[in-house]
Length: 293
Image (cartoon, rainbow, N blue to C red; front, side, top):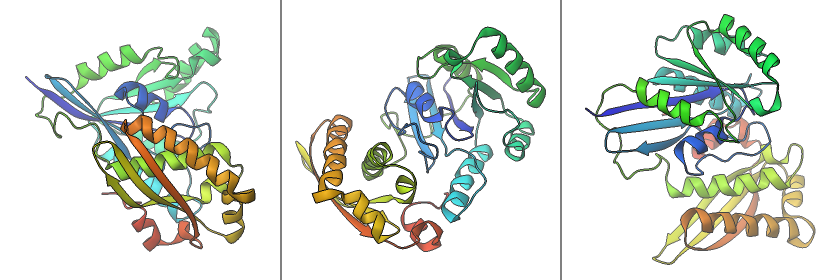
């Protein structure tokens, strides 16, 4: 008997979905930073054993869209409701449970198993947690509720065991040696974007998209050319920084992370270009991979 299924992770921004995904998959597949809207795509991470295959999906945080890119991000999150065998709804100890009722109502109508994960329990006390569990139980009466701390790996083993119990019988969906559905180039753009999220303030990281122009791999090394796109000339100046110092720092940090990720020597060249208003252009967003399958 072989079990396999899609376990989709959804929730509002900044509740720890990507950190949880990385713990469950055991590889650093989703970028996780402290800024909201870090995840922009639906990213799969695949866990294989001889008896089973779990296909985890990390999705963008659910939010009311302000521009075209966010509309497409919401489509990724909603598509995760459509094809899940098990749904993991992630919240945390500070979030207001009634924050996004439209999405929550859709979750409440689902007939598949829903596990509600209250994350970051290391930041609260037992009494507050008990009352939070009661509030969530009223909102999602059919869901199983599990308190966890993804960062501290608390409760993740229990969660993994429960997922394995709930998985349907099925042949594998992907090759058993496959770790993700995304190509290598995708992770290059994510890692560079993560460094930009870490090193720049305010609106800058949200106005940035990264594209890989060339990716040439040999046995020992990979040569990568990447373009960082911004919306305005002023942003280009900020990304590059005084005498190119800011861009140099980002490139250097990205190169180190890429070497760890690919376990090879990396030669990384980065360029900055202005692509006015790309976040509201259907064509540009498609080019950057924002159309749900």
